[in-house]
Image 1: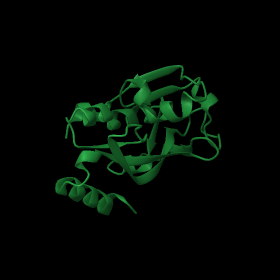
Image 2: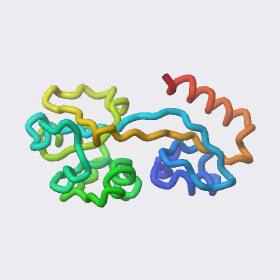
Image 3: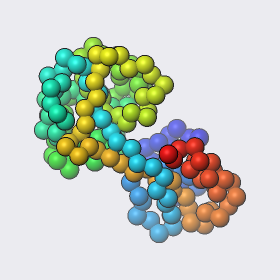
Length: 172
């Protein structure tokens, strides 16, 4: 696993630095093939005393006065920004990259900001009762994850074994 590939998985795949990428946007490249593997939903996590706590869901305009905590920069790689805020011309008042989920959750618990994550990513953590989840928009913010490989490699045994194992362990 190459952690540096997190922000540039397709270019790393095309340059043969990695063999498989997991992405949330299907690449538009004829040398690659992708398989839809699962869909998740991103939620806003906020303190129960946050000024948005009574909102039925969180809209793009609600982010304008928010302190958004993200895992890392560049902002263009962050799902909430790429899929929701940018298309709605909404930029949070403050954005802070915090790479450790534990620290980000402590900031939310201290009512120092909000973070947007899928619930599955929080399974290893004990979420305090003072942190609540809110849907993003009336319909929720869903994203599809794709496994992407080079077409030239799609029949290699280790690629197919990885895909089969991934599908067995990550699909419902």
